[in-house]
Image (cartoon, rainbow, N blue to C red; front, side, top):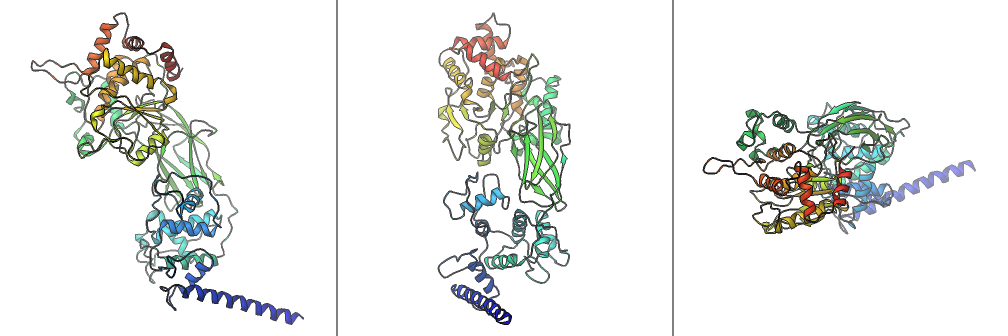
Amino acid sequence: MKTNKFVSLILAVLFALSAFTAAVTAYASAFSDVEAGRWSEEDIAYAVEKGYMNGTGAETFSPDDSMTRAMIVTILWRREGEPRVKYRTDFLDVADGEWYSSAVLWAKNSGVVNGTSETEFSPDSDVTREQLAAILMRYTSYLRYTTSLRRDLKNYTDAGEISEYAYDAMSWAVRMGLISGTTETTLSPRGFATREQFAAILRRYDGVKFTYSTKLAKAEAIYPEDGDEISVMNPLAAKFVRRFENGDFDSEADPELVYSWLPSADTRFYRESGINLTWPVSVNFVWKCDDPTRLMVLDISEDEDFSTAASLTKGRITFTPDGTYSCLVTNFKVATKYYWRVRTDFRAVTETRSFTTAPDRFRQIYLDGGNNARDIGGDVNRDGKRIRQGVLYRGGEPEVYSEEDRYCLLTQEGRRILGVDLGVKTRLDLQADSVGVERGIGEWYGVNYVLRPCAEGWTPCLTGEGAEWFREIFEVILDPDNYPLYFHCYAGADRTGTVGACIDSLLGFTEEDLKLRFDFTSLSLIWQRSWYDGEKDEAGAIIESNRVNFFNQLAEMFPEARDNCEQVEMFLLSIGIEQEKIDAFRDYMILD
């Protein structure tokens, strides 16, 4: 009886093998472009039999075609049983209902495949062999298998061509037998991975006996260090502020003197160079992890318990083969304490560290493609009280574009930063209707557009149409339902600067503060601006600017007012703005 059972077992195994061989032959022969005896014939048949891969047509497999990013994630998603996804992605090039849409969402959420940018996945881009190795390593870690084994690649003559980010993954993939050389001495890391190569890799992958990872990865925070104070203001912009405060140049005399304090090596910011000194600097967060993981999350918050994520702009996480990771982050508030940590694969967490940003005079804002954007808040007023940040932003026009005005167009990423990272709800446009700009180009991420244009050839005035314009503007600005709000004209200087000076006056800034906050636009790509303009008439006398005229007229209209702060308040009351709205605005914006 035992012998008969053994014979029956052998016959069953042989029958199963013969059935699989028949299936392999059937699938291989179903594709007209997979000829009998092709090196990948059995690999292709295996991948199709398992349901990992399909043909590119009724009778074609296209074995020599390159694998795309959409194909890769879809195949791995199928291998996982096509898990359902109930979330959305910010990838603008992945529409709902595409054959790869659910797979992209799964891959992004699982950390197996990230986007090529914050808003793009590039589903049709071909995948290189080194990129494939990195994807497979992250996928293996996602499955919680160890990925610690490596192979010395020195015998491959093109090992030096492997990108730094992929070297570790490529040495692992070769060691595990997943990726073999294109010849005995070459790996072709930047060559595109073909469909038949990936079919072979899938078959090899299923044959590897991976070791389940039971140990927790160890992650260590490196920078910023606990207790650091970090200035996030552009260093040359900070230098400009110091020189202004020291009276080292006189903006009343000549606007060109705004630049005279810079050594020649620092004049790179001139418009032709495209260097924008109104952008802040980034903080480079650095940490180490002793085991590659499927997902890394950099948490930054103003709350020690990380209950709310900070409104910041994060770059992509990069890493080196020694296990050092880094991420550039920008758009920090000034004079603010932040807490940070890194969570890896939900299995390891670094210690929580804290740092404080320096009390710089300006909170500069980075908007990709944008110019002269900054927060109204952040500085301290005449009473030494700091103004709330993240409520009102001012800046340049985000949609004008021509060869002459190439500094005024937010990219798709810039609009995402505005609407998502900063959470802006309302965009208030102060420009004239006659600029002829098509509004609403591209995705604006829910930002509501409000147009309150001045007359063409605008000059601020305190009566008639000018006064009505100011009333309409401040009805929008003082309404908390519109916050956070971004207001702009073209350069973010004259119209925006005058309106900004009125807001600053309500918040308790002195006239000298107004001059600095206006002249700061000189560091933008729109060229210099001066509170006094600096232009001279034929007799050599300085022509007073719109702003000077505006505040001089305010002083004449309200002689009982002690300063610019009371003058602006009286003016707003005179044109119909309610005292309750002004008081509520101050109470909210001025911090104790």
